[in-house]
Amino acid sequence: MTEPPETPDRDSHRAHATPQARLSPIWIVPLVAILIGAWLVYDNYRSRGPQITLMMDSAEGIEAGSTLIKTRNVEVGRVERVHLSDDLSRAVITARMSPDTDAMLVEDSRFWVVKPRIGREGISGLGTVLSGAYIQLEPGQSEVDAREFEVSEQPPVSPAGAEGLRINLVSQLGNSLNVGDPVTYQGLIVGRVEEASFDAATRRMHHRIFIESPYHDLVTDSTRFWSASGFDLRLDSEGFRVNIDSLETLLGGGVTFGVPEDLPRGMAVEADATFTLFPDEESARQGTFNRYLEYVLLVEDTVRGLSRGAPVEFRGVRIGTVAAVPWNFTAPQPDSRANFAIPVLIRIEPQRLGIDSQELDIEEWRTRFERLFGLGLKASLKSGSLITGALFVDLNFQRDQAGDYVAETFAERSVFPTTSSGFAQIEAQVTALLDKLNGLELEPLLEGLDRNLATSEAMLVEVRELTASVRTLVDDPGTRALPGNLNQTLEELRATLEGISPDSAAYGDFTGTLQQLDRLLRDLQPTARTLRDNPRALLFDSLDGEDPLPRAPQRQSRGSSP
Image (cartoon, rainbow, N blue to C red; front, side, top):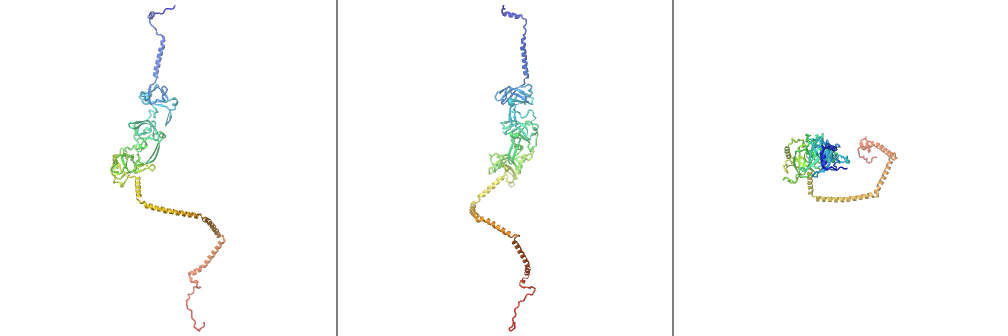
């Protein structure tokens, strides 16, 4: 038979009847599982690395759970989450680092994205084409821990902790200097541009450059920095100049530096020193002459060909520079000026003569120039190059104008006395010559010229007629036969001459006749001498008797016989 179910009273009575309830062995398994889970959680927490936050402008190529963080191509972390910042302006990346990476996470550690790039230095990051982009970590040298970092889109130009010098450059240029551009010294790359920014308040460009060791010792307080365009072509009053730097600066520009020849080497500078970045080497060299006298030239001639930076020379020695052409053009002219003049601002720079800036007394030089003005020192514009047509300012003494100096000012600047240039003098002479020509009475001259032209035309007609007559004579058959007749006559003469040759009979007869004539002349010589000495020998036979006396004939008497 089936036992009846127990009633509640019976169960409670049985429970009170058991002195102590025992723990079931089945509970051991959950307890062990809990302990193991707690240990695993603790071990996982203890083995997990630190969590960091990375900030960047764009998370292009970054994927949560797959993008790695590497150092020297070794995985040291992984991106866990990618999201936007609260103001939606930047991307925020949460990454979990590997254990034992705390020493890498200091305030000067740097992160950047490695991906395929094509630049002036070649192609990099090709290994990420298949594997995808990753974040590169470069540990810093600081002792201050950090967990938030900025991620750069470009790799750093110099390794962290590298020995060298970081300095700042300030310029008013909107040039093409970018991060990574080279810094060269006499064509050798010695550093890179690390930062480039523009300050809208001061309207200046700010660059931060790094110069590697040991080249940083080349930077002193006398060093000048200028922009290297790679190819510099200049046409000025000094002629034609071409300067070519390295191929890298030719393609992308850069910065170069050096100490001008006029300055001492100088002392070493501290880190973060600030220098001025000049547009070119000539401007950097001009920047060393920082103590000068300013004068204004009131030029009444043309200033075409005169430009800013043109030299101011005294007998071929450069002592200054043209600062502005024109300068303060709308300022009122001095009352002593009858003609309107173009103002040109020049600077007299005594430092060009090798005078140290500490020994230079500007006021003494100003007094010296005022004394030279009274002695006839004047400025004029002259051509420096026939190829470029550029002008320069030439200073020289005009002794014939020494006593006519009158001190003048223009826009609160002293006026440097000027004289007309050689071209202006030539132009004035040409103008005077034209005035004289305009004053000449040209009508009689033109009438005579007309008569001469008429006579010349008549002469030309006669010459034309004479030419026609000569042509007719030349075309006559007799004239054309004349060369043939002449040739025939010459042939006959040649035949005649051949007849009196030494071998011919005529020549022998002629020779015999000459010999007989010679004998006859020898025979006649005595007679000729006798007649020369005594001409009467031709009438009297003897020359030895006395001359006969003339007498009358005797008459016979009549009757006598004969």
